[in-house]
Length: 418
Image 1 (tube, rainbow, N blue to C red):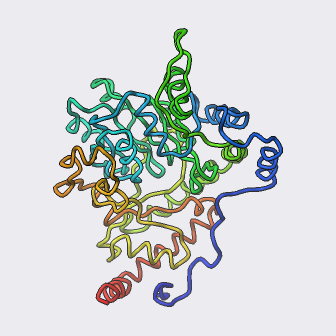
Image 2 (image 1 turned 120 degrees about the vertical axis):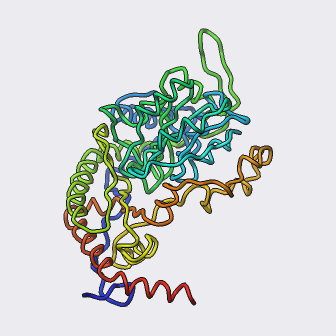
């Protein structure tokens, strides 16, 4: 039995995985052309590169009326504001996601209501939504997490029955499709992040897909300092801010979309290969892939370990895998125990006005807690861009960590005792 790298042995993977973001002369040329044009910023909105980028993005996702903005958090805040959701309204969010999903409603003056996830795919559990609905509920923000999508059929049925707005958080779901429909085109809005780690990146940025041209016009006004738009022959103003994104980022997005189809194919082929191999590893549970998820996309790939079989919780396993040269992480903590989600530190009006609604001391989200504190392991997308070799190295490292579980547990206990 070989010694774990974290205990002083040789690493399974010696060379780094492929870097991200990918770039070549096309990106340099695109940015150079923006410099030469003198049209650098986002005003007047939209610029030529922004228009081209959004046109191609809509073609990829298969619909929607797009707006480009500063990041994938303000996209959700602006969607809520465009839907007239604000002070004291309730917005249902899942208990396992990045803090931005719950922070965006607060920025709009609304109260995030956290519900548990489905342990089979770590996405929002539709069965938990109904119980969370009150007369003040106005919206649902399902998150398409990892390589999964939330059950949009069930969520839209609930939303329609209760007249609720649905904002799909698609930060992980560029290119994904549900029954042939693009992620972000099923609800009233679809929010996409373009942050530097995302599989379609412009460094920073976000895209909001809107269901109707009327919603798009209102969103464009909000992100463009409230400048008016025309509707039914009238000039309509909003109270807005500068949430625009510049032409440099849009130009990079145009080039990124040229590479995206091949990258999507490459990651999916490697993910299929990975699942065959993972199915033979004791103590590993592959997350359920819904057959209605007709095209999946891999930003991070999640699976679950049995801590008893591995003799360690996921943070110990992930630390050992990282030492073996495998880029992985434990994923998000449950939202009510998330260090990055502390409403009381925000100084925003809504937590101060409704402090009892932000007291999570008695909250119970068993599926999110088990995933976020014990069992979830998330692989970086770079593993899949390295093809079979990248997957084989990961599987070898995982088996090595499992085989050395007892020694690893002793070392972890020793470090905790220091």
